[in-house]
Length: 387
Image 1 (cartoon, one colour):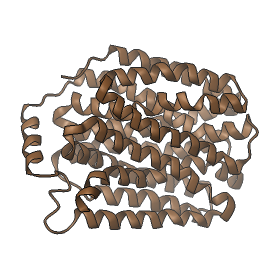
Image 2: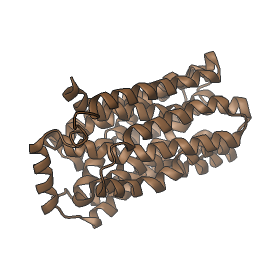
Image 3: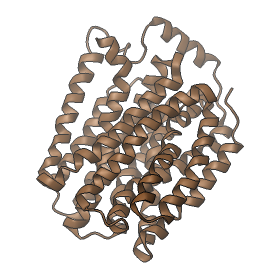
Image 4: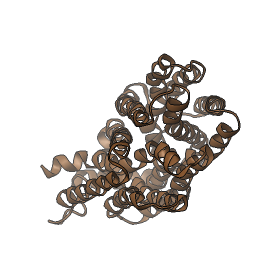
C-alpha cells in the first residue's frame, strides 16, 4: 500500500497544492462583486500570488539540489490551502493581496522538491511519470474552481474546506513517507534507483544555452496559462453573458480538459519526443485562440476550448523534462524554473492585460496572447533535442 502511495504520491500532492492555485482565479468574480474591484485590481491578486513564487522557486530549487528537504512538500501545500481558506476572513482588498502572496510562498516551497521526487524515483519512465505529476496539478486546477464555486452558494466561510483538504494531505504524506527509516525512500524507490541516480549525476553536464532558449518557451506558456485562467470566467460573464455562479464551472471545464490533455502530452512525449510535443502544442494553440477571441459566442467559447487546452497543457510535462535534461546537474533548479515559473511567471504580466481590458475590452486585451504564442512557437523550433 505504501509503495503504491509513494508512486502516486507526487501527483496527489500536486493536485492538493494546486487546489488552492486553481481556486484563486475562480474567486476573482466573487472579489469583484464583494469589493468593487476593476480588472487591473483583480489581476493584481494573481500578481501577488505569483511574484514571490517567481523569485523564490528557482532559489528553493537550488536548495533542493544541495540538501534533501522533503518537508517542503507538506508544508508547501498546507501554507497554500490555509491561505486560501483565510480569505474567508478578509475585510479589505489589501488583506486579500497579502493572503494571495502567502499562498504563492506555499507553492514556491512545494514545486521544486516534489518534481525532484519524481525525477529520483521514476527515471525509468520519466515521460509518463512527469505526465502523471503534471496531471495532478492540472486536476487540482480543475477541481479548485469547482470547489471554490461553493462560495457563490454558501458564502465565504465555505473556503475553510481547503484547510480540511490540506490536513488530509499531511496525514497521507506522514503515513507514506515518514517512519521506519523511510526518509530516504521518500526520495528514492530502492537502492538500485539510488545508485543509478548517483551515476547519472556524476557524468551529467549542464547545457545553459539551450536552457536559456527554453526559458522563452516556458515564459510564453506561463503567460498563456495565467491570462486564460483569469479571463475565462470574466469572458464568460461579460461577453457570453453567462451567470457569475457558472463562471467557475467554465474554468473547471477548461482545467478538466487540461488534466486529460496533460497526461496525453506526457504519453506523446515518450513516443514523439519531448521537443516535438512542445512544438505541436504551440502549433495547435494559435488557430484555436483566434477562434476563442474572434467568435464571441457560446460555440466559439467552448468549441475552441479543447484545442486551446491541448496547446497549453500538453507542453507542461515535456517542458519540465527538457529543463531537467538541459540542466542535468541541477535538476532541482531547473524544476523551480519549469514547474515554478512555468505557472507563476504569467501572473506578473496579468495586471497589464487587465489594464488593457479596463481601457478597451476583454477581447482586445486577449489579443496579446497571439504574439506571445508566436514567440513560444518560434523559440521551440530553435531548440535542439537534449543529449
